[in-house]
Amino acid sequence: MRSFIKKDLLIFIRDWKELLTVLLLPIVLVIVLNFAFAGLFDGDEVSMDLQLAVVNQDNETEAMEQLKERLVSDAAFEEQEANAIVEAAGEIQPVNLLSDYLESDDVKEWVTVHDLEEKEAAKKVKEGDLDGMLIIPEGYNADSLYASFAGEPPTKSLIYKMEEETMNSSALQQFIQGFIEQLNYQFAIQEITGGAEIEAALPEGGLEDIGTEHDFTMTQYFSIAIGALFALFVVATVAMKTGVEIRDHVFNRILLANSHPMRFLIGKMASTICLVVLQIIFVLLVSHFLMGVFPERSIAFWGGIFVLIILLALVLSGLAAIYTAILLRMNSVDAANGIFMLATLLFGTLGGGFVPIYMLPDWLQQIGEWTPNGLFLAILTEWIQFEDLSAIAQPSMIMIGFFLLFTFIGLALFPKRGKAQ
Image (cartoon, rainbow, N blue to C red; front, side, top):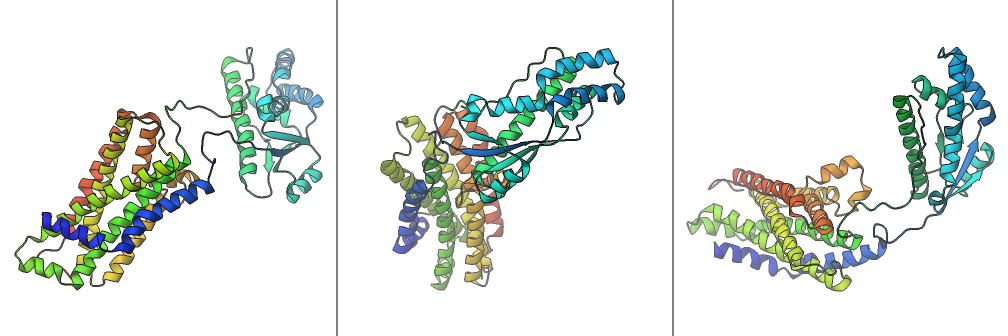
């Protein structure tokens, strides 16, 4: 087996162009992307100046009278009971709560509110002077309170409009959605408790600490994601070198030497493990020394990193076995190479190698965690933040499962003697 492993390593190392690509290009990309996305997900505070127009079409002075009339006529409340409800509802009018929320100290740091008419607000939003506009429709106060006390769904809702979806307009939408969710929560409590002494708690703005031991920075993200991405390219390259061996009749000479063909496949897997481990360690260490990616971390932390790299290398060795078996079964080496590159691009995209995975839709993020590089990124994220073995035990077992599955598929696809194309 030593000869087979040495053969594959030498074939790869002698290709200086390929070697420099998988070693130096990831470092260049990590540096460039780190500067391009500087501060986007880091722990530094980000200041935003969101401009919101509020168009209030409701008449708050008439809201309580409208509520009383609907409680008596539509919900069949007694007038005395309706008066008591109206008196209690005066303290939790949704429009007043919204105004208090937008004027609170936490939110004022992020949002500047402009009270405007609808036409003027729409014009300013279209011209880009404002990020969005919030319309409070006529009768919103009375309808919301009636729905809460009568246990019926509301017929009116707040309307948020924006010219185009940007980071600022989406942030405003999140602020408003947070208020609505909290308001619905308070009304749900009121319905359960019968409206007794309800205090409407407003959602608070700002950043939330989720209790991690260490921050996870974009520099760390790019170092891991780019390293894993180029490990996929290493796998494809190792398999592609099989085409070179076919053209040079290396595989035929192995058969003539009466060596078992399976040694050829196992040699590919072993060389893939060596190359992937060396490549990712090189990327992480160089990135660390150039940009201080993992400052002041313990030996145990680096030991965990190494173990996880070994797990990824095992999974990718199984993938290399599949690629090699496919190539040996195909008539066209170029067609096989195209399949490998397509798979690499697919894994790279879903696993967060080409764009930050946080920018992908939730369903794509969930799919991405079932790719080798995506799962590796998820496990390392947990390890960097918490350094807790229990948190990575289950996903590590999944990686071992991937290794066994890929290896079984590779062995099953590997052509029998005389069947290789």
